[in-house]
Image 1 (cartoon, rainbow, N blue to C red):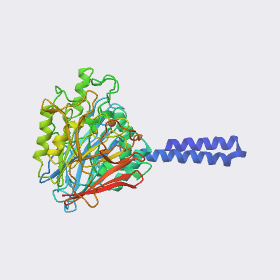
Image 2 (cartoon, protein in one colour):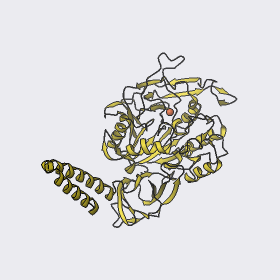
Image 3 (cartoon, helix red, strand yellow):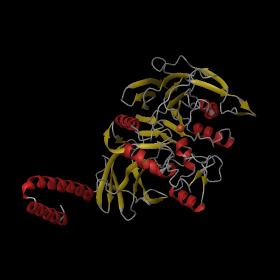
Image 4 (cartoon, rainbow, N blue to C red):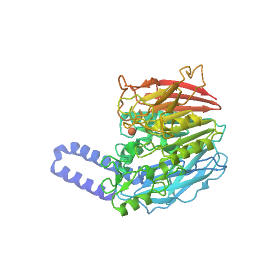
Length: 505
Ligand SMILES: [Fe+2]
């Protein structure tokens, strides 16, 4: 208790004792209760419950698409002060001393609430593939945060991945899905778009994503400290681009903290769309000075980071932007997809992730089929599974080959957004006895926290390509890789198994 507070309490006690002698015992109890509660708040503030973090440190792959002899990651955190001296050290079990890392880079998060927030980006270098390592963060010479994680794995090492989308809505379901994901101890997490509802604003990340995905306590009611220990890869969805008020672009004069996707995440910068003059990017509108400040705050990640790829273990992952401004009939973009998958053909497993599925029988988005336009490339290049979100449920297709209708040599969509073509379904694959699918399996895992919805009844013209459908519970996808075997499990928010299958190579 501070001396001032003590003197005030004593004075009040004496005054009440003199004036109301008869009731002094009751008054003393009230005063003691107030005083203790004040002491508690003071102690918490003095210790700094969050140590000045607006967002505690979280791990990112950063611009490291392929495996290196020495692995590197990035540690991000957000503060409301730029006056402090930060240091990060790391240590693996084989090292006898803590390794001092390079100092962090600082970005001002434009139009952050409260103004201003600072994003710190600290490289963690010198990691050995697949090794567990510890890290600690010091502020002004005092250690205030510690965590541990596993460096990216090399070919031949087993690993686990969790995927789900449509999540940051601050629902109990989101918390349960994050908690279940944490229990599965994934090596990395892919969020399949619609990360922060409803507009992907920084303020929405601060209230609906980081407190749950970075909760210091792990529970079904709160979420879990998933981001501190797990590399997280983002996929851009329609709710991440704030097109609510203006379909032609994001107006920074209106939504001042929009498009936080490129600020708070850091993924490889090996995509094909590198500058603002490109057509297939989320456009920025409004005052040029505001736009310039936003672009600077993304440290080179806008607009390139919506399409990228990376390797992990014996797998290759291609992340695509499936928003309506993308023209996946554009030959330059199609060539990039084909080249990316071909360059990595030696990898045992190949996966593609994007938000809006090409194959879905849900009742809201079933006619939004433009991503079918890339099916021919996926199957030509031996993609195993395509993961999407957008539809708030779980769907698994039969392994399928789809040949879209072509106009002038390229696959083309119908005016209503549907894409016609021929299906060949492999209904013999069951993932239990027959572990060798013929074709690509398309999975929708969009039950990550936002309100669920079911299948469209009597979908006109639909080929029966969906093998499994579940809209009765929120869920996540777990992929476990061992040598040449993949086991995929769909797990409910309460930890129950909804579906599972295996593939062998
Ligand atoms: Fe969506």
